[in-house]
Length: 268
Ligand SMILES: Nc1ncnc2c1ncn2[C@@H]1O[C@H](COP(=O)(O)OP(=O)(O)OP(=O)(O)O)[C@@H](O)[C@H]1O
Ligand SMILES: [Mg+2]
Image 1: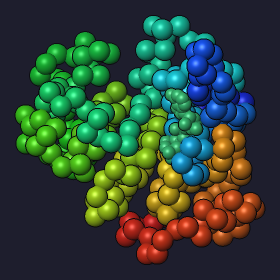
Image 2: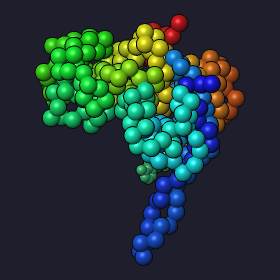
Image 3: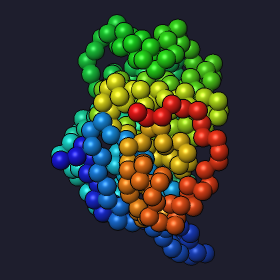
Image 4: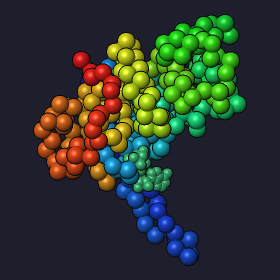
């Protein structure tokens, strides 16, 4: 059994309305998508804009309700879990978004942002929470001196590190990363990618790593799921996708990679 088993996930969104207010159409954002993710593994979900990558990631965490399909996490069906159970299950599965400026509350000090999940989910006292926050900020490489700062005082890269620390507070088994470095300066992308990879190794995390840029995933992904127009085009190991893509669409994505690739150290 894999940590995450996704089968036949499907989602349509209503598109326009006509003058009478009736729905005029539907976007098939995700159609019949299936994949698995093992504990400690990184599966990259790649494809052009609008392919349905983010919708898949959000449906897995049930931030978006799916139309049909199943999502089994750690042997339990996420899509039918009752609210209290879902809250409990969410300790094990976290999300990191593209833009840390919008995912972190600007009025919340770094300390409060990092410990908030502990307040919601545990009965740790204030001191223990602060110690945990210090330890986590240390782990993500920005240090406890940032605990009293506000998001506006931090750079994009530092903020994403805070978002990562927050995602780690409850010791999840899996993190859905939705384009976690796309909004960052090119100069810090490789650093944050390397951090994510190091954390994955140290903590045995599984990542569902949504990314439209194939150049970024080589350092972090084990396997790749290529999506187009809501469906899966092909899936394989990073090595297979890079060297022996089966589909023209994948080849086009590879051809679009600008050289040089970011100077991140390759996955061993
Ligand atoms: N909440 C929504 N309401 C209506 N349509 C949506 C919604 N979310 C996504 N869509 C549509 O579903 C399709 C897939 O969107 P999605 O955001 O999953 O793509 P993506 O692969 O993540 O793209 P990008 O690389 O631009 O982030 C798109 O056509 C999008 O317009
Ligand atoms: Mg997206």
